[in-house]
Length: 275
Image (tube, rainbow, N blue to C red):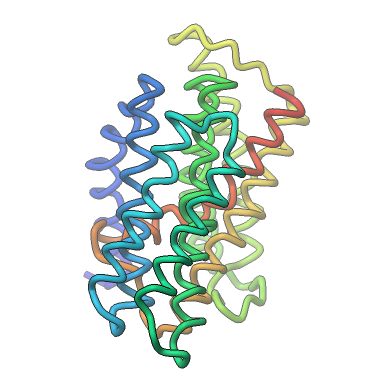
């Protein structure tokens, strides 16, 4: 069995194991907040292990705790004040760093790791909280599965066509235009199917017009791609293939949600405008 075929099988098995649990967490607001916090904790832990492991475990543990506090506090006490919360947690992290790190050669690297995890992982993923609160579980679950849909269709179209026309990304050279446009096409069909199934079986009031659906599919393709490339650039800097190995075939949790982190705030903006 080829490595590619084996990895594909692992991806499918991982998806069938993890996806039902994740979807069930969308049954209530509190479980959604808990899910976001758990994913932030795992993803930031992977990120800090990759970027800071040579500087000691205590930094990784404390930073993971600080960053994971953001979605919990946002979802409970700071629903209307996310920017204030972001400032407080950022200041707390910097004060901790200055009190513990006494090495000018590594201080900026540690600032980078903490700031990136706080904004890129905790802040961006926490857009699920207002998305759920303002537009409902159906809109939030659609946003989550947009990334799954696009990745699956882009991978399938890229493989079936040979992906001969590359996007030209230095950090992710295997991405192709065939995968991009195939992903947009497949995601458009998926949104139409999702909307109709949600209305038929779950009494959803999701009513997205075809132009908005096409816009969401296109935005998904663009920002999922940039989210993946962004994470790839970090992995290349640290010379690792994956951020972790929690999910066979996918790597770590952060490898699985890298595109979703960029998609969620943008889709939230589109729902705010057109929802």
